[in-house]
Image 1: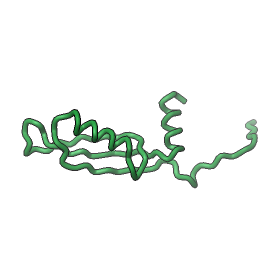
Image 2 (image 1 turned 90 degrees about the vertical axis):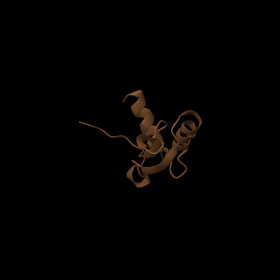
Image 3 (image 1 turned 120 degrees about the vertical axis):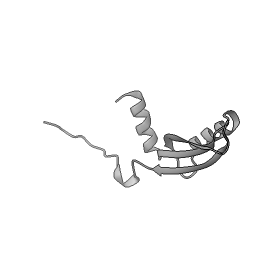
Image 4 (image 1 turned 180 degrees about the horizontal axis):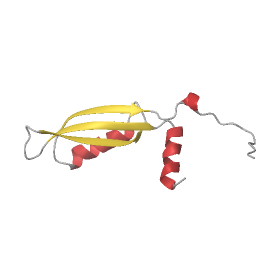
Length: 92
């Protein structure tokens, strides 16, 4: 497994899930028009610290005021789906 894959797996084990946000914002040059930006990252529900950080960055740095944000979140590994097992497995 590569470095990024290991990191993503560890994050999932810590409760992170795949979060997708549809960010609608007003175009800077044409404020009456809305544009869509899709953001996707591993994040912790329901606080969503990664998404909040990104939205803070957006409002502080980028032009184009936010109109709305729609969020979907899915934990890829549930507590009942994974259990550590102590023992030795022999493969022939």
